[in-house]
Amino acid sequence: MNEPPKSIREFIRPRKVNSSVFWQIAEELPPRLNTALMVTSIALPFSLWWAITTFGHIDTKFLPSPAQVATAFTRLWSTGEIQKDTLASLWRVGVGALLVGLFSIPIGVLMGSFASIRALLEPLFGLVRYMPAPAFIPLLILYLGIGEEPKITLIFIGVFFFNSLMVMDTVKFVPKELIESTYILGGTRRSALLQVIFPHVLPGILDACRINLAAAWQLVIVSELIAATEGLGRRISVAGRFLKTDEIFVGLIVIGVIGLSFDLFFQAMIRVSCKWASQKM
Image (cartoon, rainbow, N blue to C red):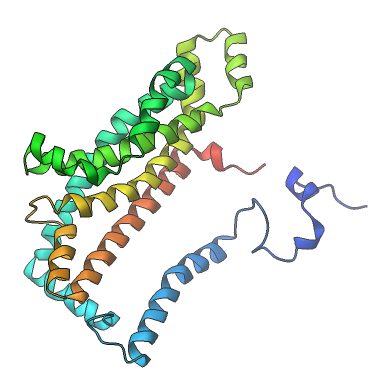
């Protein structure tokens, strides 16, 4: 007699795809395959880059080789310039993202939970989020000068409204049965908000912050055009002015590595703080 299926997924899984782990829908990959695919996603583009610059006879002013970029990175590291630029950009992005989180998460939760707050704020947020953040630069210089304030404010303006609306959408689709069950069991509006809604949407909130952090890094490049003396954006801008393509690649790769590190950090936070969200059926 055949053994019963171990889970509902095994019962409903189409038989024709059992032989391919790669194409299984809504299934976790084996750790080794997951790691191999992640390494391939980085190694393959770098391999193509090396092959093109080695065998393609391309002018290095247009596309430097990986070795040339590594040499430029070593040069900038030895002088301490890349460390100063990285720390300056990290500071601006970090402060801007922290302010976005402090304001957008509570507002997004309130907008998603209460139709009255949503009706009051969503039209305004929908209007402002279509305005390009860099268009505020002249006003920010006029109001805040040319110090750190306009740079951080630009990041805040460019991320806050998107993050608020993404958090709102996450909260808006919390199953009503969960909230009704809370009231049936004697819960209050406060307990429904803090003990049911917020824990349920926490993975979605962290994921929204992870996604919108990329926008903060895009805006820091623009913000550092505002009379900045340090920063990866300024490094890329100055390198472009003098056709130092290798230094442009250094700046881009450093930003990419930092962004990937934050991405992995947020994913780890979700796995650690929201274990229930990744449990299999």
